[in-house]
Image (cartoon, rainbow, N blue to C red; front, side, top):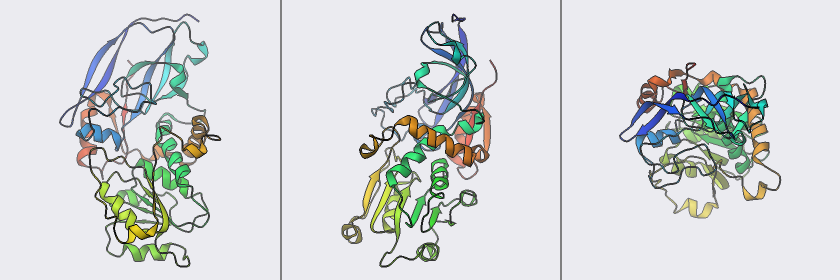
Length: 350
């Protein structure tokens, strides 16, 4: 079971202040006996959380996700290594690691680096038949599954999704499999509204007759005005107030967006005060307490892989940049979100 533990080099992405990133070359030491060394093949850029980090919209004293062991920096302080969507192949195994891991294709919740060491317990083997680029969506698919679990859609409910980024697209695709009473997704970008996600309508949230459009799309319900279940996944704090406006009596709003340091100004008087609307925060690092007796993270992963097989989200990739040109990738996402739906980083064989 003994393997080579020679030193190696890698390219690592660092987030700096003022919307800048830098790719640096680093020398790695010997491979620890209890870890594996992974050669990255591709990594995905999150247009939500990562762009908050890129723009400096995160409190530097806020802890990063404490459930992800592979994040080397524990707080959002620059310079920072961040990212959580990497697919690679195990090129070396430590002396104390089962050799079955050698050459295994794996998903890692790891920052953007061309090569890295990881505890096998933190890795997720990619199932046979799933491509490298489809596998990049595991974290997003797991999050979408968590949103739907928290929303608990019921038969015949009228469902509304705000935001058609990757998370919104995956969540909409999942919701389309339910026997709903109408599924509508909202996004101001026409390129996103053109996606085939199985929704009954893909609408512009800023159009003046939006409420009339929703009435024509939703299955009518006695004495019910507005959506029964809403998912706010746009990342825009202003959308939450709009979501409240479009939610019916005793409806539920699942808030999957993380606004970072941006405040959400809400009008909670009048109709909201009397409407018994429930606001539900949802974040993938935990499973709702009422589900933990039956749901585990492995079970959630299994549904996420099924979703990836059915949806094939790699078809949404719009841009591929080698890690050496990562600065161009982040600038594109920041300045032209309509042009860059999904952007990934690729890695040459080092």
